[in-house]
Amino acid sequence: MINTCLFGDASNCLKTLIPRYAGEIQTCVTSPPYFGLRDYGAEGQLGHEDSVDEYITNLVEVFDLVRHLLSDDGTLWLNIGDCYAGSGKGRYKDNKAYPRPSSRQKSNKGNVSGTLKKTPLHGFLKPKDLIGVPWRVAFALQSRGWFLRQDIIWEKSNAMPEPVRDRCTRSHEYIFLLSKSKKYYFDNSAIKEEAKAPGWTTRNKRSVWSIPNCSQPNTHHAVFPPSLIIPPILASSKINDIVLDPFLGSGTTAAVAKQLGRRWLGCELNQDFEELQKAKIHNLKL
Figure 1 (cartoon, rainbow, N blue to C red):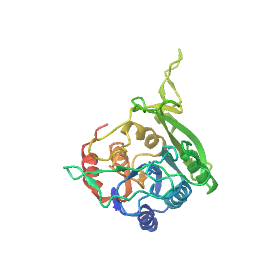
Figure 2: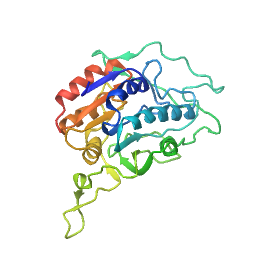
Figure 3: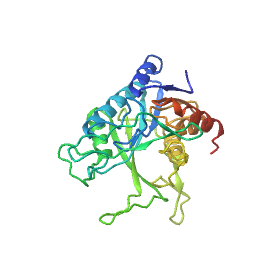
Figure 4: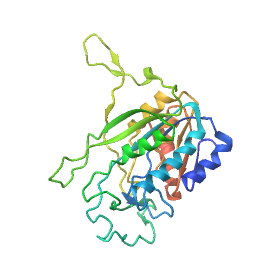
């Protein structure tokens, strides 16, 4: 089953993996569907909940299962973006949802193109509130026993412009490093970067990573840049270790893991991504 993507609900797929791989996964590198951003037309999709609280609850349940799979010195690298509440985005003012699409949109190559879905109001959230999804998720995982070790800023050096006049254009996302135990595997030397101070050749990697966004027209809209995944895999695993991505999408985590000499496992709700994954895993060169 190694070097395989299981298709279906992430929780169900992870439960299938636990009898064979509990305690065997060295690191998990993933980016779950963001709250309220896209509707991929798949039944039961995460990110399509009616409230951010439901979304966080569902995510925490997934990562509870990931903890069972991780080795005692294993880690989780979680990339997650934020969003704004309300403003009639995807819902009427009475908070009723717009009708959902009856089927997936597909390009002429048969690849999935998600339909944009905007975030609802809920509870104390007001129109135009920044929801704070990344930190809400991070604190929820911390309360479940994860060690919240670091917040990393992914600076998107080619961020898309936004037609806003009352705030700055967003050009970053968060990557959280969490560990299963107080002591965990971390190869600091594997990700050292070039030093800028005279007399030094290298320095510890900094917590702001400037990496261009990556897109694939007419395919998967939220694509991990390979260069974003390389440091987590190098720092948190050794050759032949197993890397997990429970939201594999177009397969970037698997492709990078393979190129770096690691084994991999993935889960993905939408089987229409299977051909994308195969092509990327076969063709990606670092």
